[in-house]
Length: 123
Length: 296
Image (tube, rainbow over all chains, first blue to last red; front, side, top):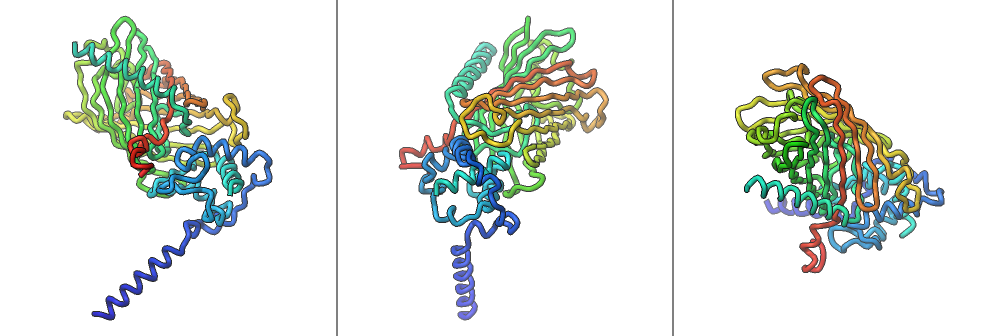
């Protein structure tokens, strides 16, 4: 019985460790992960993304993209910096409804890429 | 006395909502649909204030204008709750408050899919004089809209409405299909209806400069909606059907939309004009948490 509990504790600890070390981006499908922003070289992309950010994102993540320090995370972060363009576009499209992040699939894909360009520019 | 106070409440609340809508400063990223629902829900914590007005004239009757004033709150990213206050004015008749509706929409799937289902449940407490025509079900007909207010308001309806909303965002297009079932909570049969919508922005790429008249601020599309009979008479005979081109314009302080619905059957109105205005108050939930040092 004692061995069983020891094994159970070990299994839970390993699971928690794995969960803690895994990133949100691990869930991104490989085909999306490798996508590159097609508008990255476009000179107006970051400016257009900044406007879209102000209209749709700033109300939660704040104008300076530093979040509220609680449920609405900062977007100037190592976590965002570590994401690929494809990760960010995928996350904008999917959202995380269970944790309060709406899906922005209603925005045209081009505008999501502009938002990605803006997020890159503020890191 | 009761009639006068209800009427004044509706008129006052409509003006207050319109005022608030003009005061707010955020955009709502939604489709210019009047009858069809897409899978867009309100962002959590935001309060959208919206009015939808229908203008029409049944044959051999008087012109009417009916407004649904709507408060839409994002409870969660997957759950939106709404309150409607309805009223109408009919030429050479009267202006009356016609009732209220409570509506909830839920997204059961937390991911974005090719087709996204939304479950919709609504309770309506409205009178027979309601002319907001936010949906058509059963054998709803233009003749229902020609009954004088004094007579129609005596018919008081408690109704439950269920919708299955299926919606897809493909490229820049939104395509939505709604299947409607409505039940008068008295001993009435289930009534059925449908609404279909497709819309897209006129330009998908953001221009990078603040603008009011640039093409990405406009959406255009079309809706089709109508009744499908009821459990006693599941037929298209004597049902109303409409096709309605629609356009939406995103302004710095809200969203304006307009649609003309063309009746397709003899039970339909020849034309229904619809005008909508919507604006958002951002993160209303935080107003109540600010004293605790921020959003919780």
